[in-house]
Image: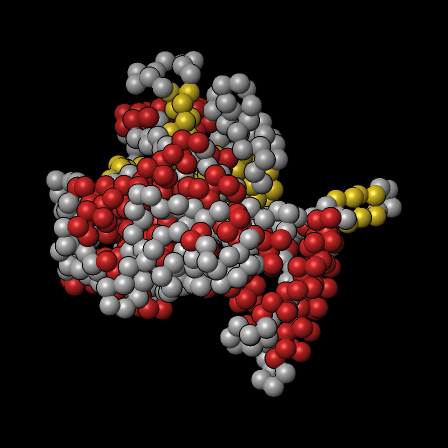
Length: 606
């Protein structure tokens, strides 16, 4: 994520004019010449203790479709040969160009860019030879990279909503009624309060404000709303499966790392998606307008990954962030160019100071912070005897408070029992438990700031988290059985530090949700939530709740909430835990002191 930080970016040129100037390449000519020198002669960096020599090569250029068409000297996506990657021929039903990915479509060659010939069939769609093609690192059409932010978030996310609204026809199974569209939009806006700000999207009513959605808004819609609020309303199983496959493919394409199996899964799901649309088109259920340039380019992502790896690594998100920063900073109406140039120089200087002074800033401490580095105080261990999460900083952030284990917290009055069972699960003997607690409203765990729900009112909740707890593999486990990791989703009630035999334990009082999987997404069912004390090293990440009024695979009409988080459907498959998986909960069920909490999901209006 370092590459997205403003202080890590530097701009080398800004071309004036609100539109692309006619002498576009004259502005880039000095940059191209510098790149040619760097790739041939390299650069020398001298430091007091050593000298470093390196040659510099440009791997790719990225941006949105019109910008890359300019860099590639391509006619653009509104032309008959509107793809810069392959030789597909567009179809024109009346107006516009639409591109069906049919068998026999070939990728453009390196020679078609380097040896431009207007009479060659291979050069159709090109208007000239791009200066970038003269670089030794030029690799062909994928040098002008596919961008996941513009192509997937804004392009495919918006297209899916168009299918729901009937933009491409109303006979296909993804079309939903106006009432269903309003329900989805109302649920998005109503559930905004239970979505952490780490999701970046605004979570507005898509039925009313789709025209104002940014790329990050469409990303959240595609990754988290489509597999939940949209998929539950699609009754055709084949259509729903294809839709979820598309979401899975886009989720993986936005990941930082991909395995061979995941790349195969992406290709399979994209082929299925295209076949599904082709089938609907052949049957007259959708119009040819569904085959937009973004839908066509979607089929080229597997080849792009084969050349350069996961698209997230070369996304234009940092570029868009830079554009936003400059747009906010430029104030002059008469000398915009001079104003922009001065801002470039100022930011370059201040960012160098920021980077050089980073260690100084990091060294500062805040008075009201509790830090933990004693891994012997309850850190979970693997079967090999290694501590889990030793690289994660755990901090309690102020204001700090003092309470006792006998206080009632959110109607939970069994904290002594919970704490005793926690220590028992850790193999720690404690005949007498110190009643004193140091409490905190916020904690810093695994790189994110987590709130507690107790006596803490906020507009955007950040107290729902995913845990990984070690449980016994066998149902009737005996002491000494090998542990297994299970995923639990909880609501954090309170962070607290407890001192036991001189060791400081960073703990949290949580309410464990009863969960199930629906369409591959965890669902927290409305009803009983079990209280539990956990170690903060078990906390993995923040999650959000997408509240739905629909009944999800249950026998009673209860409100449900889908559990979503940025890494949903990425990485290892979830292994959902149940109350029975946790040994200490068995003891609670037999105890007269056992308590439970009934929680009702609320729709938040902000």
